Image (cartoon, each protein chain N blue to C red):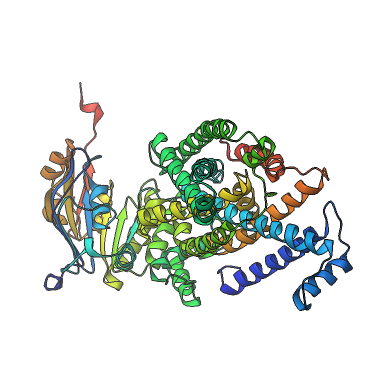
Length: 349
Length: 269
């Protein structure tokens, strides 16, 4: 397999899509109330072909709780994995991801600040602004952290050393902002400490609201735009001067990819909270399967991120049932050891 | 040679460039089609900066760089520049995970459209370039498995796959054994003649450039001190001035000068 072809990309994407569909069916069926396969098929068939809404309690669980959550976890996972892939290519460092770089934490700061201000505006404006305001605030928080990380690390990313400094700056800044987040949340909203605690680790159990449409649109558009940069990113990941020699407008691509990756990170973090390690693990595993070419990596990682996060969230809500864990606990348990393993293999820890 | 009538493929007119202090001063240089131009100078004389300016990687602070005698490089998109100018940088980026063929195919990037995938024709061109660089036996090997000399040849193959008319080579033969140096320069000069390339070679190897260049420029402290044909420029006096070392320059049977630095430690008391 010397040349990458559209056919190979289509085949890989289709297989992963199929794998996602199977995972989704599995996730629909299990939970604190198990829905047997024949019940699942009957309910789904009735929903698609049936005449009217059912009063079946199982249908309520399926369509009002599990289906939105499966959609949400897939969307969040796809977005974070794609953003991780983009950051890794850009910084030429396999340990970069939205969480490690502090982008997710910055986005959660934006979300929290927005919620505080929205609460003081009153409920009407808050509800209207929720759909757009919260993702935008999250994006601003994310973009601000990217700028700050760059500033702290003294710019660069040109050499391996430079990108290592960026990661350290990101980790430092993330822990700093996490502290601010906790202060802000506990001082303003003491009613739901458990919910806050969960959200800060990354949680997909909150009911989906109107902002999901905006978030979905941002993630899909961002993914398509990043895909346009995939060949340029291939070249940049080898070295910026080489990329320029081979015709890439390096500064423009860098700024574009940073903004888009921050935007989609901000969008999903505004709903899910900062979930760790998805953007780190998924690109790495997908690279092992399909190689380094971003043209196949982006679509594969989009779908794989969805599958991975859907599985992690399914484990999170079933393993200690009826108690649900936040999904960030599961990704953290898998991600941290893998991070150490990768660092040691690269000799950077 | 009747090449004097044609327009230069690439031309620098009074180009200056500075980081904090001036690095290149009032550079005027023309690369003609079918001609190898060499730049010689001590470390830090600005040779690499000249190459990066000519390749459009750096923008001049003042002066113009013209493509085919008329188009200013500054007005062109990077992709357009990469279709006209191929460059072998002194220290290449990291492509060690790629196979040799995939690496050479990267040279086709400037010719692909936004959604483009390399076609069978692109692969043919990359294969032809690898054949010229004598690397066809390594097609599926990883770049990391190649020796230093093979890697330099691979970088040249990638540049050749760009199919550009201008070739800028920065220390292409550095750290290679003398036989590989000669072999590689023979390839460069053959391609320059056959394809009518305008080739610029920046190198430390004075003897190599003296043998393989058509024109030579001597650089020190960011400025070109002398330029002209090899026999005009490569003289004992010029080289001694440039490097502060005595040289022996002898004309060979083919008219080209042979250059030897005079290093006789025993003579000293």
